[in-house]
Image (cartoon, rainbow over all chains, first blue to last red; front, side):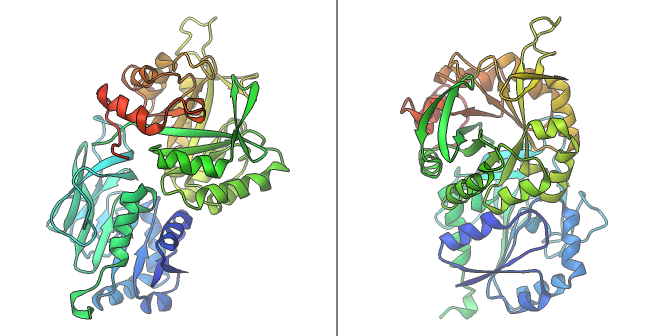
Length: 205
Length: 259
């Protein structure tokens, strides 16, 4: 199975690629819109600043992602890659997200606990989803972030730190995780495997 | 709920894991890739590999070690030792590290923190501080000194102030080693850890002095540490991360279990 991983120069891709290969996927790394258009399965990773997603607009990758998502290609955003599915983030107010989800990502309120939120945090699967098939309430995954998405009907799992926020979103073929499944041990690998095994109902044989 | 992290530390010299007592007596403890995998399997929340050779000739060996260790490691993996430039950091990231730990190079050129942070994100930059209480100061803890060269040389900098500067320059975490406690197995320096943890808003990893489960309970409670590092406690079969965490859970510390 081929997975296309988008490189937009935000942090390193090594860990994500390593985990995908470990799960038996064939990986392809690209920063080009034409390659994105032919993807069978797409991952938008990302650590760092929301402003870095500007590169997706500059290279024409944004409309290509919009096209493949509309075609039903499974899409997974990781960390900033998940936040980008929303309208935007207060981290970089002038930079628009994909707006697949209408809400805006915001910073954790300060003063109560340390921000960034770094470490292993328990998950609460929010409703039935493909990503969290076989994942039990209370399993731990690794987070490192200061901005987060609100809980909405698209939320697939929530987490609690300072407040309850969206640890993952899923709406049909469009999925996102705020945590790093590639760094979350067996639980993370299982979630990535669930993504790799996702089949759209219409294309299933 | 966010849990307290137990981090397994591998001190590596010429491609082998070693552990010194107060950085002096060095004992061979095994293959880094094999030990990293074992610690992850046995419940460590994160692996830190500190290269204490860090000579020019040692660089290639280190990158090869990092590559081998990272291959089957699916928990956060930090690497330190001999990283003096953003290019050095990039090589370590390319080899499979998620974070770099920088120490004396950051003291020599604090802008290195900004530069690695800009390219790879703050979450990828750990600033390691070797600290020693200053017995001659009015407040030996708040005025603890920053040391370099394995604790042999003072820098004239104060630990709390340097930790704050590192944070403001874009460090994602502080790895605080008490040189007074390191290798003694007599407990962490909880007062020093708490002073630094309260001074910054980024996670503080306590290091140096782990010997018993009670020491870990103490550094999370009194020391306000977000994570604790242990090396020698694991290597010689004293305990595994999992059994340590099971005991911590019984003592009321929130940890990742089962793991």
